Amino acid sequence: MLAVNFDDTIAAISTAIGEGSVGIVRLSGKKALAIADAVFSGKGNLKPSEFKTYTMHYGRIVCAGEVLDEVILTIMRAPHSYTREDVVEINCHGGIVALRKVLDLVLGRGCRLAAPGEFTRRAFLNGRIDLAQAEAVIDIIRAKTDSALKVSLEQLKGGLSKEINKIRQGLLNILVVLEANIDFPEEDLKQHDMLEASESLSVVRRQLDRLLDSAKAGRILRDGIQVVICGRPNVGKSSLLNALLKKERSIVTPVAGTTRDSIEEMIDIKGIPVRIVDTAGILKPRNLIERKAVWRARNHIHSADMVIVLFDANRKLKEEDWKLIKEVKNRNVIAVINKIDLKAKIEKEKLSKTFYKIVELSAKKVKNINLLEDALYEFVYQGKLASPDFTLVNNLRHVNALKEAQKLLNNAASTLSDKLPLELLTQDLKDAAGYLDKILGKDLPGDLLDRIFADFCIGK
Image (cartoon, rainbow, N blue to C red; front, top):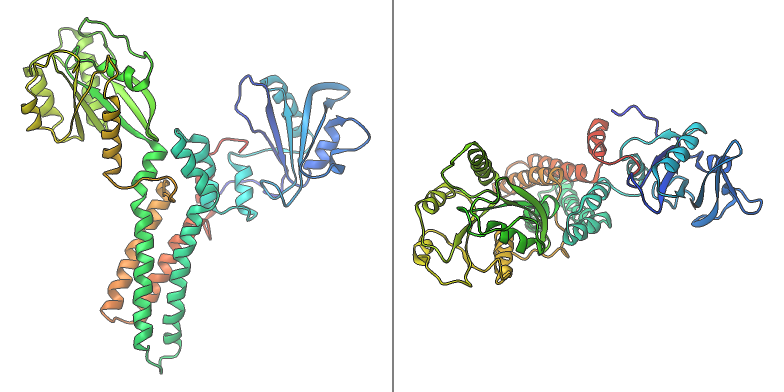
Protein backbone atom coordinates (compact mmCIF):
# COMPACT_ATOMS: atom_id res chain seq x y z
CA MET A 1 0.00 0.00 0.00
CA LEU A 2 1.17 3.55 -0.73
CA ALA A 3 3.09 4.79 2.33
CA VAL A 4 1.46 8.19 2.72
CA ASN A 5 -0.43 9.90 5.51
CA PHE A 6 -3.78 11.15 4.27
CA ASP A 7 -3.94 13.59 7.18
CA ASP A 8 -1.02 15.52 5.67
CA THR A 9 -1.59 18.79 3.85
CA ILE A 10 -0.58 18.24 0.24
CA ALA A 11 0.40 20.51 -2.63
CA ALA A 12 1.18 20.14 -6.32
CA ILE A 13 1.16 21.99 -9.62
CA SER A 14 -2.27 21.18 -11.06
CA THR A 15 -1.82 22.51 -14.59
CA ALA A 16 0.22 21.17 -17.48
CA ILE A 17 3.91 22.00 -17.37
CA GLY A 18 4.96 24.58 -19.97
CA GLU A 19 4.40 28.19 -20.88
CA GLY A 20 0.89 29.53 -20.42
CA SER A 21 -1.09 32.48 -19.19
CA VAL A 22 -2.02 30.81 -15.89
CA GLY A 23 -0.64 27.95 -13.81
CA ILE A 24 -2.15 26.64 -10.58
CA VAL A 25 -0.52 25.44 -7.37
CA ARG A 26 -3.15 23.54 -5.38
CA LEU A 27 -3.12 22.85 -1.63
CA SER A 28 -5.48 20.56 0.30
CA GLY A 29 -5.63 19.68 3.99
CA LYS A 30 -5.95 21.02 7.52
CA LYS A 31 -2.98 23.40 7.20
CA ALA A 32 -3.86 24.77 3.75
CA LEU A 33 -5.34 28.06 5.04
CA ALA A 34 -2.56 28.60 7.60
CA ILE A 35 0.11 28.07 4.94
CA ALA A 36 -1.72 30.50 2.66
CA ASP A 37 -1.66 33.04 5.53
CA ALA A 38 2.12 32.67 5.71
CA VAL A 39 2.88 33.22 2.02
CA PHE A 40 0.09 35.47 0.66
CA SER A 41 0.00 39.25 0.93
CA GLY A 42 -3.16 40.95 -0.30
CA LYS A 43 -4.99 44.23 0.04
CA GLY A 44 -6.29 45.15 3.49
CA ASN A 45 -5.58 43.38 6.72
CA LEU A 46 -7.52 40.18 6.07
CA LYS A 47 -5.67 36.88 5.82
CA PRO A 48 -6.73 33.93 3.60
CA SER A 49 -7.99 32.08 6.70
CA GLU A 50 -10.50 34.94 7.12
CA PHE A 51 -11.70 34.95 3.51
CA LYS A 52 -15.15 33.63 2.69
CA THR A 53 -15.36 30.32 0.89
CA TYR A 54 -15.63 30.36 -2.91
CA THR A 55 -13.92 33.75 -3.16
CA MET A 56 -10.92 34.91 -5.18
CA HIS A 57 -8.40 37.54 -4.06
CA TYR A 58 -5.61 39.43 -5.81
CA GLY A 59 -2.25 39.65 -4.10
CA ARG A 60 1.38 38.51 -4.08
CA ILE A 61 3.27 35.46 -2.94
CA VAL A 62 6.11 36.69 -0.76
CA CYS A 63 9.18 34.92 0.69
CA ALA A 64 11.52 36.79 3.05
CA GLY A 65 10.37 40.11 1.61
CA GLU A 66 10.86 39.01 -2.00
CA VAL A 67 7.82 38.92 -4.30
CA LEU A 68 7.77 35.59 -6.15
CA ASP A 69 4.68 36.27 -8.25
CA GLU A 70 1.47 38.24 -8.54
CA VAL A 71 -1.40 35.82 -8.07
CA ILE A 72 -5.12 35.26 -7.66
CA LEU A 73 -5.86 33.18 -4.56
CA THR A 74 -8.98 30.97 -4.48
CA ILE A 75 -10.41 29.67 -1.20
CA MET A 76 -12.71 26.59 -0.91
CA ARG A 77 -13.48 25.51 2.63
CA ALA A 78 -14.27 21.99 3.82
CA PRO A 79 -16.49 20.12 3.27
CA HIS A 80 -17.64 21.91 0.10
CA SER A 81 -14.50 21.41 -1.98
CA TYR A 82 -13.10 18.87 -4.43
CA THR A 83 -11.43 16.87 -1.64
CA ARG A 84 -13.89 17.81 1.15
CA GLU A 85 -10.88 19.41 2.87
CA ASP A 86 -9.80 23.03 2.96
CA VAL A 87 -8.48 23.76 -0.53
CA VAL A 88 -6.40 26.74 -1.66
CA GLU A 89 -5.55 27.33 -5.30
CA ILE A 90 -2.82 29.83 -6.14
CA ASN A 91 -3.30 31.05 -9.71
CA CYS A 92 0.16 32.12 -10.84
CA HIS A 93 1.62 33.23 -14.15
CA GLY A 94 2.02 30.09 -16.20
CA GLY A 95 5.82 29.91 -16.50
CA ILE A 96 7.47 26.92 -14.86
CA VAL A 97 9.95 29.04 -12.86
CA ALA A 98 7.25 30.98 -11.01
CA LEU A 99 5.21 27.83 -10.39
CA ARG A 100 8.22 25.93 -9.06
CA LYS A 101 9.15 28.76 -6.70
CA VAL A 102 5.65 28.97 -5.28
CA LEU A 103 5.41 25.18 -4.94
CA ASP A 104 8.82 24.99 -3.19
CA LEU A 105 7.72 27.76 -0.83
CA VAL A 106 4.52 26.03 0.32
CA LEU A 107 6.33 22.70 0.60
CA GLY A 108 8.80 24.39 2.91
CA ARG A 109 5.94 25.75 5.05
CA GLY A 110 4.50 22.37 5.94
CA CYS A 111 2.98 20.80 2.83
CA ARG A 112 3.92 17.44 1.37
CA LEU A 113 4.15 16.91 -2.39
CA ALA A 114 0.98 15.13 -3.48
CA ALA A 115 1.21 11.58 -4.81
CA PRO A 116 -0.23 10.87 -8.28
CA GLY A 117 -4.01 11.27 -8.14
CA GLU A 118 -3.99 12.04 -4.42
CA PHE A 119 -6.44 14.95 -4.64
CA THR A 120 -8.98 12.71 -6.38
CA ARG A 121 -8.17 9.83 -4.04
CA ARG A 122 -8.98 12.07 -1.07
CA ALA A 123 -12.27 13.02 -2.73
CA PHE A 124 -13.01 9.28 -2.92
CA LEU A 125 -11.84 8.46 0.62
CA ASN A 126 -13.80 11.38 2.04
CA GLY A 127 -17.00 10.18 0.37
CA ARG A 128 -17.46 12.97 -2.14
CA ILE A 129 -17.35 10.55 -5.09
CA ASP A 130 -17.22 6.78 -5.49
CA LEU A 131 -14.40 4.95 -7.24
CA ALA A 132 -16.17 4.75 -10.61
CA GLN A 133 -16.55 8.54 -10.56
CA ALA A 134 -12.92 8.96 -9.50
CA GLU A 135 -11.75 6.84 -12.44
CA ALA A 136 -13.82 9.02 -14.78
CA VAL A 137 -11.55 11.96 -13.95
CA ILE A 138 -8.56 10.43 -15.73
CA ASP A 139 -10.79 9.48 -18.67
CA ILE A 140 -11.92 13.11 -18.98
CA ILE A 141 -8.30 14.24 -19.08
CA ARG A 142 -7.44 11.65 -21.75
CA ALA A 143 -10.60 11.95 -23.85
CA LYS A 144 -9.75 12.00 -27.58
CA THR A 145 -13.16 13.02 -28.96
CA ASP A 146 -16.25 14.95 -27.89
CA SER A 147 -18.18 11.68 -27.59
CA ALA A 148 -15.54 10.15 -25.32
CA LEU A 149 -15.60 13.28 -23.18
CA LYS A 150 -19.40 13.13 -22.92
CA VAL A 151 -19.32 9.49 -21.76
CA SER A 152 -16.68 10.27 -19.11
CA LEU A 153 -18.57 13.33 -17.87
CA GLU A 154 -21.70 11.22 -17.51
CA GLN A 155 -19.72 8.74 -15.42
CA LEU A 156 -18.28 11.54 -13.29
CA LYS A 157 -21.82 12.81 -12.65
CA GLY A 158 -22.66 9.34 -11.34
CA GLY A 159 -24.48 7.86 -14.35
CA LEU A 160 -22.68 4.51 -14.20
CA SER A 161 -22.83 4.43 -10.40
CA LYS A 162 -26.59 4.94 -10.57
CA GLU A 163 -26.97 1.96 -12.92
CA ILE A 164 -24.73 -0.21 -10.72
CA ASN A 165 -26.64 0.76 -7.58
CA LYS A 166 -29.94 -0.01 -9.30
CA ILE A 167 -28.75 -3.54 -10.10
CA ARG A 168 -27.30 -3.95 -6.62
CA GLN A 169 -30.55 -2.86 -4.98
CA GLY A 170 -32.45 -5.36 -7.12
CA LEU A 171 -30.19 -8.14 -5.81
CA LEU A 172 -30.69 -7.05 -2.22
CA ASN A 173 -34.47 -7.06 -2.67
CA ILE A 174 -34.32 -10.67 -3.88
CA LEU A 175 -32.05 -11.63 -0.98
CA VAL A 176 -34.53 -10.23 1.54
CA VAL A 177 -37.23 -12.60 0.28
CA LEU A 178 -34.93 -15.63 0.08
CA GLU A 179 -33.19 -15.18 3.41
CA ALA A 180 -36.51 -14.76 5.19
CA ASN A 181 -37.34 -18.26 4.02
CA ILE A 182 -33.94 -19.60 5.13
CA ASP A 183 -34.36 -18.03 8.58
CA PHE A 184 -37.87 -19.49 8.96
CA PRO A 185 -37.67 -22.92 7.28
CA GLU A 186 -40.91 -24.07 8.86
CA GLU A 187 -42.71 -21.78 6.43
CA ASP A 188 -42.36 -22.89 2.81
CA LEU A 189 -41.48 -20.25 0.29
CA LYS A 190 -44.80 -19.31 -1.18
CA GLN A 191 -45.32 -19.92 -4.86
CA HIS A 192 -45.89 -16.25 -5.64
CA ASP A 193 -42.68 -15.34 -3.72
CA MET A 194 -40.74 -17.84 -5.82
CA LEU A 195 -42.25 -16.39 -8.99
CA GLU A 196 -41.47 -12.85 -7.81
CA ALA A 197 -37.85 -13.79 -7.08
CA SER A 198 -37.49 -15.36 -10.52
CA GLU A 199 -38.98 -12.36 -12.31
CA SER A 200 -36.86 -9.91 -10.29
CA LEU A 201 -33.72 -11.90 -11.10
CA SER A 202 -34.58 -11.77 -14.81
CA VAL A 203 -34.94 -7.97 -14.61
CA VAL A 204 -31.57 -7.62 -12.85
CA ARG A 205 -29.86 -9.87 -15.39
CA ARG A 206 -31.25 -7.82 -18.29
CA GLN A 207 -30.00 -4.61 -16.67
CA LEU A 208 -26.52 -6.08 -16.23
CA ASP A 209 -26.47 -7.54 -19.74
CA ARG A 210 -27.40 -4.13 -21.12
CA LEU A 211 -24.44 -2.52 -19.38
CA LEU A 212 -22.07 -5.20 -20.66
CA ASP A 213 -23.43 -4.80 -24.19
CA SER A 214 -22.25 -1.18 -24.04
CA ALA A 215 -18.69 -2.18 -23.15
CA LYS A 216 -17.39 -2.52 -26.72
CA ALA A 217 -18.65 0.93 -27.69
CA GLY A 218 -17.40 2.40 -24.42
CA ARG A 219 -13.91 0.95 -24.76
CA ILE A 220 -13.67 2.12 -28.37
CA LEU A 221 -14.66 5.66 -27.39
CA ARG A 222 -12.03 5.57 -24.66
CA ASP A 223 -9.14 3.88 -26.48
CA GLY A 224 -10.04 4.22 -30.15
CA ILE A 225 -9.27 1.79 -32.98
CA GLN A 226 -6.35 1.44 -35.37
CA VAL A 227 -7.14 1.56 -39.08
CA VAL A 228 -4.48 0.82 -41.69
CA ILE A 229 -4.61 2.02 -45.30
CA CYS A 230 -2.81 -0.38 -47.61
CA GLY A 231 -2.55 -1.09 -51.32
CA ARG A 232 -0.02 -1.29 -54.10
CA PRO A 233 1.99 1.83 -54.99
CA ASN A 234 0.27 4.92 -56.39
CA VAL A 235 -3.33 3.88 -55.73
CA GLY A 236 -3.87 7.04 -53.63
CA LYS A 237 -3.21 5.93 -50.04
CA SER A 238 -1.61 9.23 -49.02
CA SER A 239 -4.36 11.20 -50.76
CA LEU A 240 -6.96 9.24 -48.79
CA LEU A 241 -5.15 9.95 -45.52
CA ASN A 242 -5.09 13.66 -46.36
CA ALA A 243 -8.80 13.59 -47.26
CA LEU A 244 -9.72 11.93 -43.95
CA LEU A 245 -7.53 14.36 -42.00
CA LYS A 246 -8.85 17.31 -44.02
CA LYS A 247 -5.27 18.58 -44.34
CA GLU A 248 -2.11 17.73 -46.27
CA ARG A 249 -0.19 15.40 -43.97
CA SER A 250 1.35 12.99 -46.49
CA ILE A 251 3.36 14.01 -49.52
CA VAL A 252 1.45 13.19 -52.70
CA THR A 253 3.21 12.88 -56.08
CA PRO A 254 2.62 10.94 -59.33
CA VAL A 255 5.80 8.96 -58.53
CA ALA A 256 5.04 5.46 -57.23
CA GLY A 257 6.66 4.68 -53.88
CA THR A 258 6.72 8.26 -52.55
CA THR A 259 5.68 6.99 -49.10
CA ARG A 260 8.62 5.02 -47.76
CA ASP A 261 7.56 4.80 -44.12
CA SER A 262 4.32 4.48 -42.20
CA ILE A 263 2.61 7.72 -41.17
CA GLU A 264 0.23 7.73 -38.20
CA GLU A 265 -2.37 10.32 -37.18
CA MET A 266 -5.25 10.40 -34.68
CA ILE A 267 -8.55 11.59 -36.12
CA ASP A 268 -12.15 11.84 -34.97
CA ILE A 269 -14.57 9.94 -37.20
CA LYS A 270 -18.15 10.52 -36.05
CA GLY A 271 -17.04 10.54 -32.42
CA ILE A 272 -14.73 7.51 -32.71
CA PRO A 273 -11.00 8.07 -32.00
CA VAL A 274 -9.23 6.48 -34.96
CA ARG A 275 -5.48 6.05 -35.27
CA ILE A 276 -5.10 6.00 -39.03
CA VAL A 277 -1.91 4.60 -40.56
CA ASP A 278 -0.77 5.30 -44.13
CA THR A 279 1.63 2.54 -45.19
CA ALA A 280 4.13 2.17 -47.98
CA GLY A 281 2.87 0.51 -51.14
CA ILE A 282 2.93 -3.30 -51.10
CA LEU A 283 5.21 -4.38 -53.92
CA LYS A 284 8.12 -6.71 -54.60
CA PRO A 285 11.02 -4.89 -52.86
CA ARG A 286 13.81 -3.66 -55.08
CA ASN A 287 16.20 -2.62 -52.33
CA LEU A 288 16.73 -2.68 -48.55
CA ILE A 289 14.67 0.48 -47.93
CA GLU A 290 11.65 -0.87 -49.79
CA ARG A 291 12.01 -4.26 -48.06
CA LYS A 292 11.92 -2.52 -44.67
CA ALA A 293 8.95 -0.36 -45.69
CA VAL A 294 6.92 -3.35 -46.92
CA TRP A 295 7.78 -5.31 -43.75
CA ARG A 296 6.46 -2.43 -41.61
CA ALA A 297 3.33 -2.15 -43.71
CA ARG A 298 2.58 -5.86 -43.26
CA ASN A 299 3.15 -5.60 -39.49
CA HIS A 300 0.61 -2.77 -39.31
CA ILE A 301 -1.89 -4.79 -41.34
CA HIS A 302 -1.71 -7.74 -38.96
CA SER A 303 -2.06 -5.62 -35.80
CA ALA A 304 -4.86 -3.33 -37.03
CA ASP A 305 -8.49 -3.41 -35.91
CA MET A 306 -9.60 -2.55 -39.45
CA VAL A 307 -7.82 -2.61 -42.82
CA ILE A 308 -8.73 -0.36 -45.73
CA VAL A 309 -7.52 -2.01 -48.94
CA LEU A 310 -7.26 0.61 -51.65
CA PHE A 311 -7.62 -0.04 -55.37
CA ASP A 312 -7.21 2.25 -58.39
CA ALA A 313 -10.41 2.49 -60.45
CA ASN A 314 -8.30 3.51 -63.47
CA ARG A 315 -6.19 0.32 -63.45
CA LYS A 316 -7.02 -3.34 -63.83
CA LEU A 317 -6.31 -5.72 -60.96
CA LYS A 318 -2.76 -7.04 -60.94
CA GLU A 319 -0.90 -9.86 -59.22
CA GLU A 320 0.11 -7.52 -56.35
CA ASP A 321 -3.57 -6.76 -55.70
CA TRP A 322 -4.50 -10.45 -55.46
CA LYS A 323 -1.58 -11.18 -53.14
CA LEU A 324 -2.73 -8.36 -50.86
CA ILE A 325 -6.34 -9.58 -51.00
CA LYS A 326 -5.14 -13.01 -49.88
CA GLU A 327 -3.06 -11.46 -47.09
CA VAL A 328 -6.03 -9.59 -45.56
CA LYS A 329 -8.47 -12.47 -46.02
CA ASN A 330 -9.03 -13.06 -42.31
CA ARG A 331 -8.93 -9.40 -41.24
CA ASN A 332 -11.72 -6.85 -40.82
CA VAL A 333 -11.61 -5.21 -44.24
CA ILE A 334 -13.24 -2.37 -46.14
CA ALA A 335 -12.39 -2.38 -49.85
CA VAL A 336 -12.10 1.11 -51.34
CA ILE A 337 -12.02 1.87 -55.05
CA ASN A 338 -10.29 5.22 -55.47
CA LYS A 339 -10.08 7.64 -58.40
CA ILE A 340 -13.70 7.27 -59.52
CA ASP A 341 -13.25 10.66 -61.23
CA LEU A 342 -11.17 8.83 -63.86
CA LYS A 343 -12.25 6.29 -66.46
CA ALA A 344 -13.11 2.98 -64.80
CA LYS A 345 -10.96 -0.01 -65.82
CA ILE A 346 -11.01 -2.08 -62.63
CA GLU A 347 -12.96 -5.37 -62.62
CA LYS A 348 -15.35 -4.39 -59.84
CA GLU A 349 -17.39 -7.61 -60.15
CA LYS A 350 -14.33 -9.64 -59.13
CA LEU A 351 -13.91 -7.55 -55.98
CA SER A 352 -17.62 -7.95 -55.19
CA LYS A 353 -17.11 -11.71 -54.92
CA THR A 354 -14.35 -11.21 -52.36
CA PHE A 355 -15.41 -8.23 -50.24
CA TYR A 356 -18.68 -7.71 -48.42
CA LYS A 357 -18.20 -3.93 -48.26
CA ILE A 358 -16.92 -1.81 -51.14
CA VAL A 359 -16.77 1.99 -51.04
CA GLU A 360 -16.15 4.01 -54.20
CA LEU A 361 -14.65 7.48 -53.83
CA SER A 362 -12.19 10.06 -55.09
CA ALA A 363 -9.64 11.00 -52.45
CA LYS A 364 -8.15 13.73 -54.63
CA LYS A 365 -11.57 15.34 -55.28
CA VAL A 366 -12.67 14.56 -51.66
CA LYS A 367 -15.78 12.85 -53.03
CA ASN A 368 -17.73 10.20 -51.07
CA ILE A 369 -15.32 10.35 -48.11
CA ASN A 370 -18.41 10.38 -45.91
CA LEU A 371 -19.34 6.92 -47.24
CA LEU A 372 -16.06 5.54 -45.93
CA GLU A 373 -16.62 7.24 -42.56
CA ASP A 374 -20.11 5.68 -42.45
CA ALA A 375 -18.63 2.25 -43.19
CA LEU A 376 -16.09 2.61 -40.36
CA TYR A 377 -18.84 3.70 -37.98
CA GLU A 378 -20.97 0.73 -39.01
CA PHE A 379 -18.02 -1.63 -38.40
CA VAL A 380 -17.54 -0.29 -34.88
CA TYR A 381 -21.16 -0.35 -33.77
CA GLN A 382 -22.51 -3.10 -36.05
CA GLY A 383 -25.80 -1.31 -36.60
CA LYS A 384 -26.54 -0.90 -32.90
CA LEU A 385 -27.46 2.47 -31.48
CA ALA A 386 -24.32 3.99 -29.97
CA SER A 387 -25.62 7.16 -28.42
CA PRO A 388 -23.35 8.57 -25.70
CA ASP A 389 -26.54 9.76 -23.97
CA PHE A 390 -26.78 6.22 -22.61
CA THR A 391 -24.39 5.18 -19.85
CA LEU A 392 -21.51 3.26 -21.41
CA VAL A 393 -18.99 1.06 -19.63
CA ASN A 394 -15.52 2.08 -20.82
CA ASN A 395 -13.20 0.78 -18.10
CA LEU A 396 -11.66 -2.71 -18.31
CA ARG A 397 -11.78 -3.14 -14.52
CA HIS A 398 -15.51 -2.45 -14.59
CA VAL A 399 -16.05 -4.82 -17.53
CA ASN A 400 -14.27 -7.68 -15.75
CA ALA A 401 -16.27 -7.14 -12.55
CA LEU A 402 -19.55 -7.07 -14.50
CA LYS A 403 -18.63 -10.28 -16.32
CA GLU A 404 -17.97 -12.04 -13.02
CA ALA A 405 -21.29 -10.80 -11.67
CA GLN A 406 -22.99 -11.98 -14.87
CA LYS A 407 -21.62 -15.53 -14.41
CA LEU A 408 -22.88 -15.62 -10.84
CA LEU A 409 -26.34 -14.39 -11.83
CA ASN A 410 -26.53 -17.02 -14.56
CA ASN A 411 -25.66 -19.65 -11.95
CA ALA A 412 -28.31 -18.22 -9.65
CA ALA A 413 -30.95 -18.43 -12.38
CA SER A 414 -30.08 -22.10 -12.97
CA THR A 415 -30.20 -22.82 -9.24
CA LEU A 416 -33.61 -21.21 -8.97
CA SER A 417 -35.09 -23.03 -11.98
CA ASP A 418 -33.66 -26.40 -10.81
CA LYS A 419 -35.06 -25.80 -7.30
CA LEU A 420 -31.72 -26.41 -5.65
CA PRO A 421 -31.04 -25.33 -2.02
CA LEU A 422 -31.67 -21.64 -1.44
CA GLU A 423 -28.32 -21.27 0.33
CA LEU A 424 -26.55 -21.80 -3.02
CA LEU A 425 -28.75 -19.19 -4.64
CA THR A 426 -28.23 -16.55 -1.97
CA GLN A 427 -24.46 -17.05 -1.97
CA ASP A 428 -24.29 -16.42 -5.73
CA LEU A 429 -26.38 -13.27 -5.33
CA LYS A 430 -24.17 -12.01 -2.48
CA ASP A 431 -20.99 -12.68 -4.48
CA ALA A 432 -22.47 -10.89 -7.50
CA ALA A 433 -23.29 -7.87 -5.33
CA GLY A 434 -19.69 -7.99 -4.08
CA TYR A 435 -18.37 -7.57 -7.62
CA LEU A 436 -20.67 -4.58 -8.12
CA ASP A 437 -19.32 -3.10 -4.88
CA LYS A 438 -15.80 -3.39 -6.27
CA ILE A 439 -16.74 -1.10 -9.16
CA LEU A 440 -17.90 1.54 -6.68
CA GLY A 441 -14.80 1.07 -4.50
CA LYS A 442 -16.34 -0.59 -1.46
CA ASP A 443 -13.95 -2.72 0.61
CA LEU A 444 -11.15 -2.60 -1.96
CA PRO A 445 -7.61 -3.42 -0.73
CA GLY A 446 -5.19 -0.51 -0.56
CA ASP A 447 -2.76 -2.00 -3.08
CA LEU A 448 -5.49 -2.05 -5.74
CA LEU A 449 -6.33 1.58 -5.01
CA ASP A 450 -2.63 2.37 -5.35
CA ARG A 451 -2.57 0.82 -8.82
CA ILE A 452 -5.71 2.67 -9.91
CA PHE A 453 -4.56 6.12 -8.79
CA ALA A 454 -0.99 5.58 -10.00
CA ASP A 455 -2.31 6.27 -13.53
CA PHE A 456 -3.30 9.81 -12.52
CA CYS A 457 -1.05 12.80 -12.95
CA ILE A 458 0.36 14.59 -9.90
CA GLY A 459 -1.91 17.51 -9.09
CA LYS A 460 -5.21 15.83 -9.95
